[in-house]
Picture 1 (cartoon, rainbow, N blue to C red):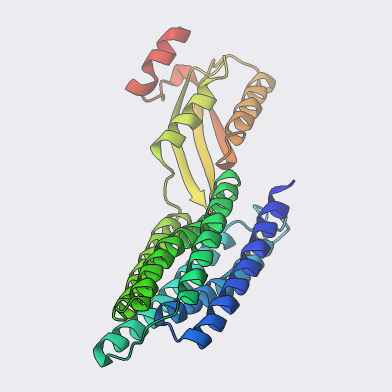
Picture 2 (tube, one colour):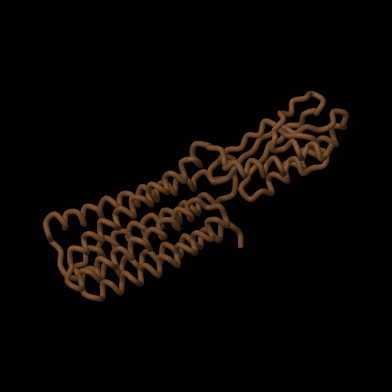
Length: 304
């Protein structure tokens, strides 16, 4: 299945699941009055809201290139992830306020076992969503789905904390319920900060990890007629990487031969999963522009 169909499907599945959890938790909260449940209901409601935005964003970012966007629409996806982060942080504020206010005023009551059961169901569902979104997000290099996975991972931990609070309230320690709500808020805040940190690099054109740069140079040097590579520049364009570099070849080659080498090197670099496009400049090796690098010296010596 194509990437765009897969990521869109995941977005819809997450949206439906979060809506169902929000309705379930809100309904049981109305019956039990559990602050841990209302905080979880708010969290699931926020998840459903940003899931709708993610679905719309994934639809836009998976549109094919057009005249106005010749490199595609992938740059939209980090903005979607940041919107998710804003929603998550906003939900954290609301949850923290409800828990702290309850602690200060002493307005908490015991919670029946039904609340604990709902929290357990929510934790199991969130773990399943976490594994599902993380797998697809990493396979298809989707920061929005990875952000969604991280939110679900934190929801598992905060649901367990809320479960402890509801259980404590049920056995005669109701103060644990608002404390659990505060723990939920802390988890939500940490998730929002993590999502922001992950996506800022995509937006400002940061360099990818060093191991990817090494893979790029190795892909260029894998061609038997390439004697060296230098001036390698790789940076994020949305969640994907654009690359430019110079390669060294024999200076007495014909233009057609040099063109064929350039084409092969470009394709080898584009075949790296993280790379969107590559731009290769050919230099005659006799000019001596190749900058010696210990990491690649052995490979160059082996060829000579």
